[in-house]
Length: 368
Image (tube, rainbow, N blue to C red; front, top):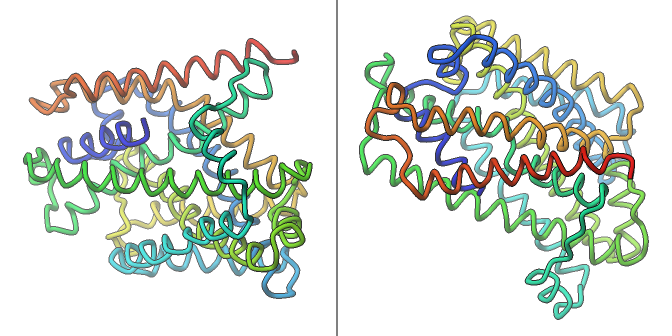
């Protein structure tokens, strides 16, 4: 489902020559674009703030500096990279940071789970229909098939074309079979890697925290400290490194996707390819989103709860956005003869239906 949705978003960006915000503004009522983008920005800002706090907490586990003192330097570092770093530098940085995610795989192995039980539970999952289960399921869907990645994927395809010198919309419109095949392979590899990492995050938590009843984790510090006596210092260090790497990957994508969406819908100049003076509003949105997110850490909201409920919000927001994306992907005025085929339509609509069902199930069982 992740691969299908991300490829559809990539194809929209490649064929239309615009990000999702621009497509919604040009081809659909203004209220559709503004409502979707407003909800996206709120969820992204909360998510970015809690990720900044998680990075600071993880650094605190490696260096004895209070986490709150690290929040501001972490935020400044991220914004500085986005504003003054070149697009090529940002891409290279992101690629190297993905290596840090292998730390989660190592942490799971150091936890020494019972591999027979792991295999059984992987192939035969437990399914319940109570509110706690459905809310968690929606959060998992919302943190993987997530709205900010819809906007980011389409916008990054446009960025790549701008990098190739296709400055005008007419030059960017359309995509060859080869270009689409490359994009499909790129998305498939990325989503497989993301799923493998996510699997080992769950496994590391299940094999340590869950099996010993340590399920009331409120912060990254709580998680890493709880891991240390259960699976040794190596797993705790690896968990911390994974958290730092994943946070540094996530925050620029969250604030950047908000900036792309707002600027595209408002017809403002945008893009990480642009210098500060060339797209001041784009970078101002990134800076303000990061600042507001940073302040969340001083409100003493438990970061794990904040991340969880942000994922739930994303899970509620994603299904209607997926419907819009599917309509765009089948609109010949936008896509020409590159509208979705049968398989893409089946997977895309099935994903929207499953996420709608999870959201409705959560609300119907609320309080039960």
